[in-house]
Amino acid sequence: DVKVTQSSRYLVKRTGEKVFLECVQDMDHENMFWYRQDPGLGLRLIYFSYDVKMKEKGDIPEGYSVSREKKERFSLILESASTNQTSMYLCASFSAGRNTEAFFGQGTRLTVV
Amino acid sequence: GDSVTQMEGPVTLSEEAFLTINCTYTATGYPSLFWYVQYPGEGLQLLLKATKADDKGSNKGFEATYRKETTSFHLEKGSVQVSDSAVYFCALSRNAGNMLTFGGGTRLMVKP
Picture 1 (tube, rainbow over the protein chains, first blue to last red):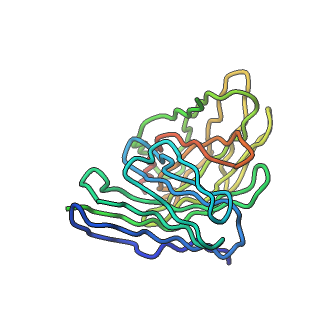
Picture 2: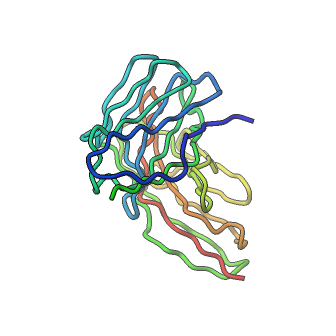
Picture 3: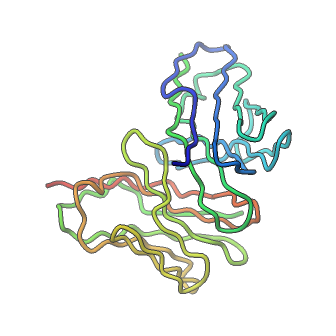
């Protein structure tokens, strides 16, 4: 059974804290993505990575960074959490090639207080 | 840039009713089109897809046809069940990296 696993389902952090969201996939996929999901806005792409140590900005990268030191792991970092980063965060992975299916983790609901 | 527009919800139906969720897109070239479903407390999972014009994707009784002339990919099901209650996302993928552009999502609530 293929899996994308996010380290936490729920997280509460204080304003100004550095926050790490971890994502691990066991499918040997090249491509990994971080989205945030907000009501009425759908999913918006934060960052993505096509390979180890490679990263590209998505549509809303401000306030975030990422790390991909190993193929199976893609971390999202909030350098200094703010209340407007309270959201659901979803990690996804794809294999390379056209029209392949995306596999999503269960999501991390982050609340910044 | 690419965009996907889908009808706002929530959509509330009685069991065995007919479902349509509208989706239209804007993209250059020939994108692939997808419907993803998110059940309560879970991540998204692929429901169906279509990769070229006039293709019909189908799964679990759901269908959607890729209409290039109207840039649409409407989701339909002839008889919904309570277990179909979820949020449905229309999405497109245009580039080789398979980056998905999502619509805003439509919440479906099916009552017994």
